[in-house]
Figure 1 (cartoon, rainbow over the protein chains, first blue to last red):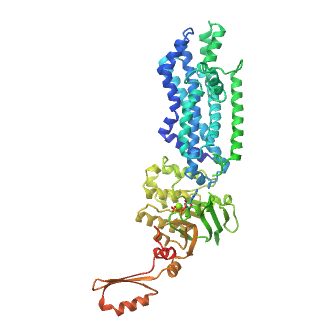
Figure 2 (cartoon, chains in turn purple, brown; figure 1 turned 180 degrees about the vertical axis):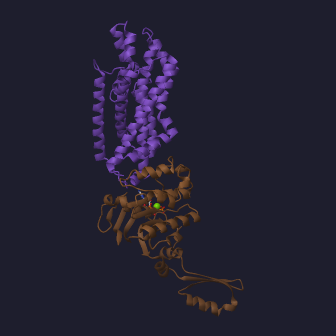
Figure 3 (cartoon, rainbow over the protein chains, first blue to last red; figure 1 turned 180 degrees about the horizontal axis):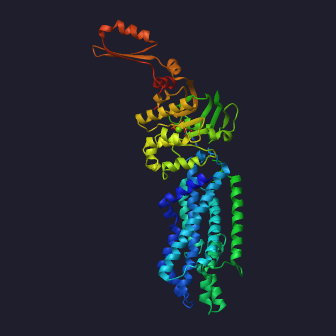
Length: 290
Length: 277
Ligand SMILES: Nc1ncnc2c1ncn2[C@@H]1O[C@H](COP(=O)(O)OP(=O)(O)OP(=O)(O)O)[C@@H](O)[C@H]1O
Ligand SMILES: [Mg+2]
């Protein structure tokens, strides 16, 4: 298996333009933020001190989610390409079994997701450190790493479900474009969830993106939230959290980070069941015989 | 010793029959050609033999009795019609990462020497010339030290020197290791390398024999005579004695002549009534 995983990783990291395009969604969110989102939001929350220091980690959180979504998709796409090029048939002549082959692609996608999220984390963190003098708290790094791994996992299997419908390399580009664009909205980065209509907000709660972002923001913004809101009434803080999508709200309950994690695990289980069901009833699937 | 046998192999795609009732028997150490024009069903046959697609009906038997490709797959090497190697990776990566996909210990040094890979070892596969690519393709297919090597059109698009070179290596391997080689081609002259030829047309097996027998059965020897008057005459003869007779009789009138045995082109022409391409 390690041979195949190495191969897949090497292919991903040797394709510079592929990497660039798989980070497109993340870069768009970053640039949009720099150009006007941040100004806009700072003026909206002028009563909160150090808004900029609050918003920087807010952006990092959302962009990490986008990165996880698009890079795992890009890595997993290799499987569809390999099937079309008969590479899978060729690999199945080796000693790696059928399951080993499938797992190799999944593990590759997870590793790619983890590496690229970490890269984005440090790039953005250092950028804001230089430009806005925001601090990068290394004490929260273990938690960040945990979320990085969990989000890489959930998006790998989410994308596996998505690619179950892509048999042709043709379709891949289209899927990548749609996912790249949609992820920014679903992760609540292109605009804060609070400014969107109620129905849209409801739809957003049916993908893992929102919860993924919420986990990140929870950890990344914690200390600055305490700092900025220490002299303000609780209601203002709650309003801010709700509008900006730092916590997800179900009816009247605000989810804790533990509940976010649980929700994501439930998503993972549901998606896994769906993938198995689809592979049973349809041959148009990514997990089928080579 | 029998190494591979098919019985009444059929493959349909929808209503279309790509392979129609083909039975082959291949012995260990043989060099076998599947010869046929574009769309004859050669690749489809190979793909069934290597377990990539399932036959609609019929049987494939490996060794003496195994019908399960899974049990046999590590004894198979395949060079696909369109390459399956990764163009973004180096030759070294393409070979060494493949080595890691097998459990057994593999020494690739002799393959590197045989296929002269050391000078292109660090080069990206995608940047190689067609002939270099093919050398890497074949070397990679031999990594697991297979008993059976399948080559789907190994020399399409290569110049004559490279082609000759590749056939030399393959022939050497066969003599050295007793490798069984099954290849497809529509180069008629290339099929002359084979011990045994299966000619396929529109999914059907239309002839199977050795090169010599095919020539004997389906062609005549050809005598072309150029007369001093400038007139030329082409004759089909059964044997050389006839030719000697004609040449002696007309000795004084002849300025030049050409005598050749029938080729695979003639075989194909006589079998199907048309040229292969
Ligand atoms: N997946 C498929 N679906 C439908 N038809 C197919 C499929 N694969 C092959 N065919 C058809 O089966 C026939 C045999 O194809 P095959 O690829 O085996 O030919 P070939 O002898 O290898 O030709 P070539 O010399 O061009 O490689 C062709 O008519 C082809 O169109
Ligand atoms: Mg073919």
